[in-house]
Image 1 (cartoon, protein in one colour):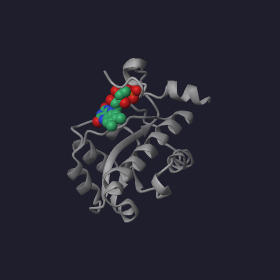
Image 2: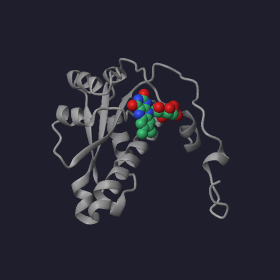
Image 3: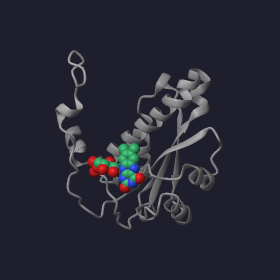
Image 4: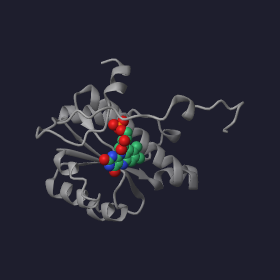
Length: 176
Ligand SMILES: Cc1cc2nc3c(=O)[nH]c(=O)nc-3n(C[C@H](O)[C@H](O)[C@H](O)COP(=O)(O)O)c2cc1C
């Protein structure tokens, strides 16, 4: 699939078929995430794979009942590793780079999923404290996104974007 097609096809999917994802396919998209750039190449993030239905139910409850988390056979929790980045970059590492590392890896995974026929949605609306408790994460791991992954069971209409000129600015003109 051409990259442009992948960009066009990727959209948030919130309904999934009851079809398992093979380990090979899962590894393919996880490796795509790992190929993402990171600050100082520290890769200051972790990916936690959740397939257990009981844990998926708990995660949905911690995410204001976003029940597609339970429907998706796999959920991947992207965590910033605050400590790993802080060791090299101090506050900027723990407050920014580690979060960016996790974020860009998640975005790569979302794009790679499209190529293998899978669909995802970014879940950012969750109670961080509850997710940390469910997953037993140590203090230095900050969950930044839960990504449900599955075969799509809906075809939503494309979501609009702000206009090009509203978003893109020329530095010489400044923002009005
Ligand atoms: C940081 C972030 C947080 C988001 N949180 C949620 C969420 O909690 N639940 C949800 O259904 N979608 C969530 N989304 C998905 C957005 O609603 C979606 O990407 C946006 O509406 C554009 O639609 P598209 O992904 O289909 O292009 C989130 C996306 C981002 C980037």
